[in-house]
Image (cartoon, rainbow, N blue to C red; front, side, top):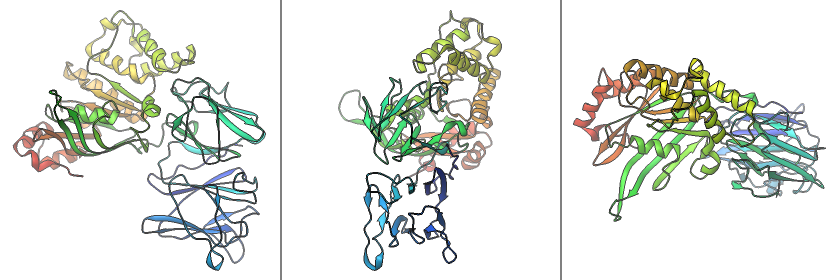
Length: 496
């Protein structure tokens, strides 16, 4: 039976406890000592267990100097830490073990290599989680298929970029192996893309794009995206700490620095405007965030809590880049254009019905339903811009990056475009990043990212709400901020 699990608060340390098919979660407060064991009249631990193989005073979690530790309190059956039994130390207690994100602890009778079904399985986690965690038991199943299509799969993640039948687990004499089903996005085990069957061991982490499954030996704990429509609204999706971005000089001699010391967060459901004079580094920063300019970057960019650059080939399917120039076919209708885009961007096994649903959803989101059968060449400039956005939106990207989509539009068309983008962010949970110059409709945006150029290098001048930006620069209209920065650019640098 699948059991629903909570969504932990962002940035909190959590302990996931799996016992008797039930998943529970505990947010570990650093101010407390978290005892672990069976409850009795004279013993009421913070984490209560039911298993008969757990002692009443089994173990304890404690934080010392910003580091979490676990120690076994001399329990009868001990604790298995990352596959190794913790041995007793002085006074019947084992030495504390230092905990890191992803560590697995077990309590059972069995050897370290195989878990006891009566035992307790625990995951220590410090990472952000998208979706709600559930437990999927593997016992008694010879094969389990993971994918998008619930009619073909046992374990379903209904995301367009996941194949209908994406991966499968097969039981071989009590051991499970996983293989990819020829998917477009691939299947990854412990950070490595698999090319053939791979034998799974306890604590192995299976990843498909931004979905994760943890193998427990007897089942999978995974973040179920069906239970969290729209994701964890307001959570940090993109987090950048870029010390420098350099490219080679056109002469081939030496390097040129483009941006320096950028610290920035973009949240789910947030519409962010990137502002600044020409050459201030707006496009460079945007391309660092969307992963198209990774070379020469000193620093990190995290997407959905993971290192984006290190996991680019897996995570790139959730980021869409919309260029300034329309990439449309004027002789096609709007529906035909989006259908072709869906065929190119979605997994190869996406059926006609699913493609039609994605096109319909995209037309609705972009307010283009009435233009479904209109030829591209007969659309207004603003309508063409929206279709251009639809090229990426039809693949349901979580993050959309747009380079001056308002270029060449009249004031009314600009406002309509920005209202559409605001709807994608606020109503559909997309993180939308937009490079703009005209700030006449800036209050439609949740955040502004103002860049400035100091000694030829792009620097971050401000990141926050439009209202806070006006107060920061001491202006009534943000268009005046350009002049304020030019008079004293070094004054407004935000250091990290």
